[in-house]
Length: 128
Image 1 (cartoon, one colour):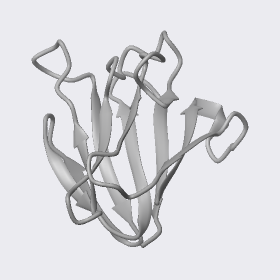
Image 2: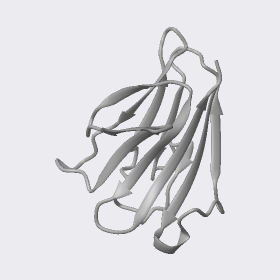
Image 3: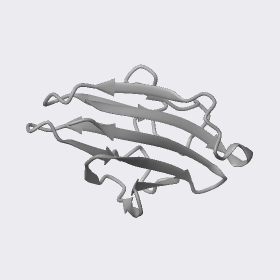
């Protein structure tokens, strides 16, 4: 089971959890959870006017062995207007635009707006 929680944070709201959204999916091969502005395909949707987030920005995919990975999908622009970081405990790494990284345990994916103090924080917990 993969559980996701998402909070959208702007400037003065840092640390706030109001409006937190949740989604989960069994760890079955081919299971997918998406995060982005397009409510028709994303289980976790950001505000429509947060253009630093693509229509479909992040895709969590369960592989054949029941392990999960996250991909930062390339959008319509050559250069993204955000950056994406993976944080697990004290460990942090940037995820490349169009890149994929495996997930283990629990942590957070942070989508940062390069033009202002806004972020989308997606916590994940993988229950083995």
